[in-house]
Image (cartoon, rainbow, N blue to C red; front, top):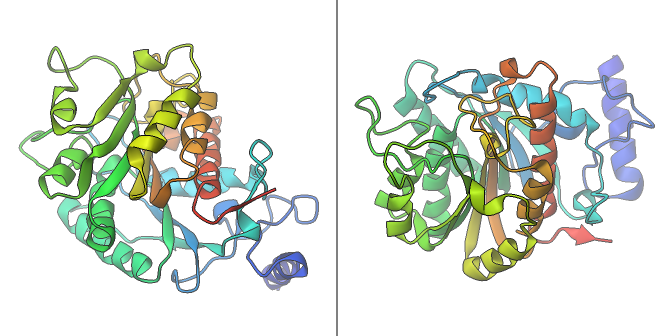
Length: 331
């Protein structure tokens, strides 16, 4: 009964000033109240009728080091109760512009990575068939591969803004071609990416070869290393990236380990000397004006950050992604 009352209150908050779903204000509904959804938005069973949807993919059996990203979606949702309806920095008003909801999680097979990829493809094919833009809560970076398979099937070869400490362009790892270190090589092999419209930002750390990013460069990717980002604003870089992406479809994939582990320790393969949160905001806000057709935030492993700050940062970055989607209103 109390939850029904909560839903009715949310509905009143949403309908009183907008025909869209609205993240409820903590001034009216206490943050701990209600079922845990992304930004406390309404929960739907499908993406039907939505312009954008938050969707979780709780998979981590593609990880090579510390597991736990299967719990990422759950913890990101919990910390997202702190995120409010308007972007104070950019004045974006996504909930005055788009119909958004949380559509829950994609089911996965925790004993079979390839079968999980099949299940992800099937789920995302339904999502994109409705015209909805998915904002995905990972999960390890393996999930981006089946998502991009589905996206490219609808939109053709995609531009990619990839933020990460690692290139994720490995070929075979422990005898397997599918894991969180190989998704973008598989995507290139299948023609899913427009390689001249791919940028990888924040790559750093020790490598297996003298130039660990040679393969990316040979494909035509723009590679921006972590060292390239030290002690500088990334706004000028993103101006160039907007020109690089042009008018074609663009997907944003953000691995939380792109950030320095001082800010985001809750991840499986941390690398020192990474991006600052302010630079992450510059990157995502710099995607405004692109034809963004989907986004993901991956590799949050909550067990390694008992403060919850990694998941909180992830929730804010997903909100920033929502704010740069096409047709979002700005005040």
